Amino acid sequence: MEVTEKSAEGLDRRFLVKVPAAELDEKLVARLQNLKGQVHLKGFRKGKAPVSFLKKMYGKGVMGEIVQEIVAETSQKAFTDRDLLPATSPHPHFHSDMDEVIAGNADLEYDVHAEILPTFEPADVSELSLTRPVADIPDEDLDEAIQRIADQQTSYKAKAKTAKAKDKDQVVIDFLGKINGEPFEGGKGDGFDLVIGSDQFIPGFEEQLIGAKTGDDVEVKVSFPEDYHAKDLAGKEAVFDVKVTEVKGPEKVEIDDELAKKVGLESLDDLKTRVKERIETDYNQLSRAHVKRSLLDKLDEAHDFELPKGMVDQEFDQIWQQVQSAELDDEDKDKSEDELKEEYRKIAERRVRLGLVLAEIGKRAEVQVPQEDLQREMINMARAYPGQEKEVLEFYQKNPAAVQQLRAPLFEERVVDHILEKAKVEDKKVSKEKLMEDPDGDDPAA
Image (tube, rainbow, N blue to C red):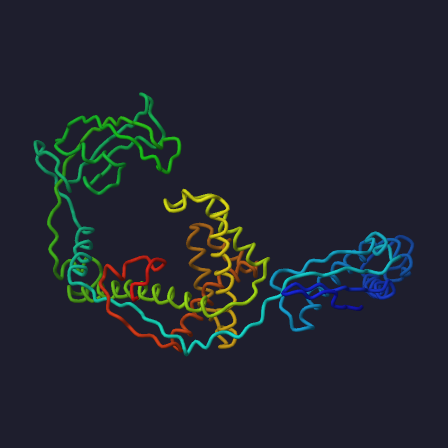
């Protein structure tokens, strides 16, 4: 077998691979010798059939397998022997007549082509200076969070039959919805508990029940939103015949130790501590999102190297499919398709560049994703498909590529953690409103 470099332009590499017919025949004979003891042929004792006879019977099929194995092996080996990492899967271009090769009458000769990953020196992350926005938790946020917990524990008590329903009251209703006088699927319910103002039903429905009493029949007229999830109902006008069978008023829930015990805690102080910790976790995640965005911007600015076109094309295709399936932002609606493609290709280039930079930094720092983190992510994915958890876990066990897709974002986050530990990071107090801003917008710490 002979492998020679045919061309090297930028990141593009092409190798010529030659495998003499005699070498292929040696592999074929060795494979058939192993096969002799496994087949039963009429007229021969087991394991005694001559190789020449086996060639006639199985030669083409076995040679086809050998060629596939050689191509797969050499396609990778041509790069790894030269310490090159293909950016995408190498693919062969055959020069030989493959029928003649498989018949044992010709040498195997083909080109193997791929782009390679670029080599570059990553920025010294210890020299990066970053500002991380942080905010104090306002007392009102803590009070509002605890009040929401109290509201979730609200119980309702039947009002007098003459009492009129008010906002925040609970009405028990039977209803039947019609469009153009005809009932529609999903438009019927009996004994439904509806809290007025909870926005459980489509806009305009609940407000029309204000003032209703037990036993009242109410005709509710509404229009389904244009973006309603059931496309056959979206934008259509409907009339609901509603029977109010009971009106209930909310009973005040005291914010005290008893409330804490209802949610499984020992005291109100314990509840306040838990709620504050949860809000702090949310704030910390927002702070991290902002400083990560700032970090990625600086890494992008600090690196300029040739990118594998195939990787950029793949990333752009994924982005463009998402753009085509979603509604354009107002700022993009007046742009031509060419202008949009140019913008999104720059985004694709940024993503590929940052992916390569983070991968190189992580490699040099020997960043690893613990197996327990990967296992936890698989379990989370399985839980997203109730009743199919076993099948989902088996899918990941049998598909290394799918596991790699799970591993990639975990690896990225660990590399970001590593960089933030090494970089010069200064905390800066900002308002809650500033912290809540979209990290992809203006940097709140600027």
